[in-house]
Image (cartoon, rainbow, N blue to C red):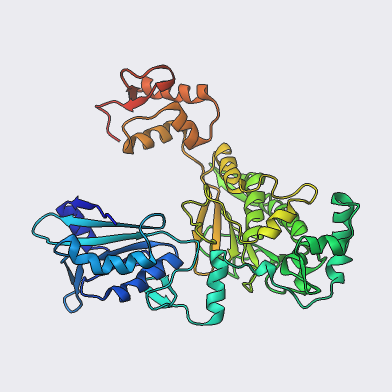
Length: 464
């Protein structure tokens, strides 16, 4: 295995030595046995990924760190051999040696770990997961099952439920569905063919999709609760709660449509003061629909909690039980695809007017709708046991503000880039913004770039 040597500056050395050990960063001495270090690599891979720096000494009493790397590449062979067997170079694991400028000496082994699709074990065969700045062993059977579900290796939707088959073979939902979608089939054989019945018992997916009242069978893990808080504060309180929480029940198809409708209805009653006038808050209906749909279809149904929709004076929060599955994280969620509940996602798409019309494109649709309305992107964040999406009623800047903000960090900007940032579809609208800024003496054409390659840069005498 060839590992590159990357020269770094004194400033980079100082930055690394000052890094805080967090959920994503760990620093270790070369004196620590490689087998012990595999715990950190297992923990990062099973959580959200991270970085391990090997070659940093720490004096706990003085609270100081020093750079003491391997004297040469060969000196790290013992570490590399053990690591490569369990966490092979390429794909989810990348290795490099950092060569520091003097007076720091030695090569620090820098390993970058991505969140992996499968469970990774340490050299001792144990499974670890990174929580804050600690590598926690996953010891109980239930904890390992939870990790497998988070990884998408298993899914709670396939587990069977001790409930009468009539709940899914003779419900109003299944009868309406069969008449509309497969009128020549009978519920029992059709559900069996779809792997929704095993050993004479319905699966969790069958109950959620085709039972008239899944909440009677799966209490506290199959409903949506809607709250209205009269505040812009970071947390809702009992004092700011406008009314008792509303609970949306029924099969998943009905829940989605009812939750979106009720959320919109409540939002329309929210007024904010704008330049002395009370105005109604507006969010794109498609954004609310797509994010609530994603919360319902991709939540972890093994978690004994409901989906929570919290409506504030300046935002809507949608919290869904369970962390992002498999290799999905906040950064790649718009480009990568993975379904925790594959049967639910596939079968709800068979309903008339399905909530997930463009399978896999819901998040992008939600983001695009916000841009077209002139609002900032939704914010996706992971908590310890859930995923939350914040839809904020915060206006994007004008095109001119976006252009100048972009040029603060970039040498030039094009029409295509501005349209991508703003959601504006018209080239002429963006051209007009460029012309206004040029007339104001803020930007100028990049020499030699015309036609489709035309670009603009800020004037050299303009500071941002």
